[in-house]
Image (cartoon, rainbow, N blue to C red):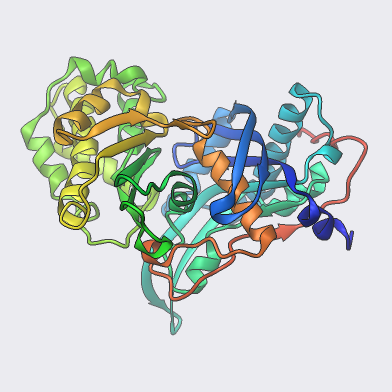
Length: 406
């Protein structure tokens, strides 16, 4: 076991797996790739990518335990191990599909599932801290798969008074910064986050933050109003109209108007927010509600660019990733706000709209194993550089242990 990390570090090209279940809880994004170098010399080659659905009961339990009013500590404790097992199963399946064994994979980078994120520094018991919690323990993944697993990437930044988010800007910087043009990368997952890369920028000149809702409000209301997981291609929104009363209520939201650095999640835009919003939306047609929150999602992204970015950096390109890229109505709204700016989906280095975040956590794991700080102080507000992630070693087995069903 002592030589595992040194053996990995000696390899010029490593085989790795990246894993994430995001705030939308759509599934476990699983990418298999090869990686060489580190920091700005990083090179990746995508081998395969699969999203494995999350069982409806598991998703409901995650949502329940992400809510202050319904969370139960014993359920969170069990989910921490259960999700580790489910992540390990995703690893097993992608290896089987590609006819690989655990011995042929050097490491796994796993984000896990965020259960709570507290980026506001508030005093508690005499301590003023920022905090975050992801479940799906990397030690469970490592011991089931037998593959060295790196996880818990956010907490080191929080320890240095950073928000622990967003983390995507590191990948954006090392792979997409340009000497010729200023560009922004927008990821529309459950939450929307933007990375601004000024022309020929250094790491400390990168601007990035969570702008506000991504798919979270749209998905939550689609479930509530239509019993559907999301608005496929924006078809429901396309049938509605923006309701001015509801739109103005949404514009009074406190988060999206905050000055960066900032980050948010289900704690702000979850069930409580949606309940309050639906009280205002009484007697408004369902299609108009979906159209209005879709429009607000685009507006909140543009507001943040116009208010906090444009005066310093005028971008030429807006490159979009995440599930929101498939929502045609959302894209049309973004185009109407970002006039004169080229808008396109991400498709570079083998990275696309679906696999980007999973790739990120393989890259962050590689930086951790290389001993390189990967937090971005200009983005998170941290007081110093931090190596992100915890390394969990697992003993290789001839086969994956089979999960016992109750």
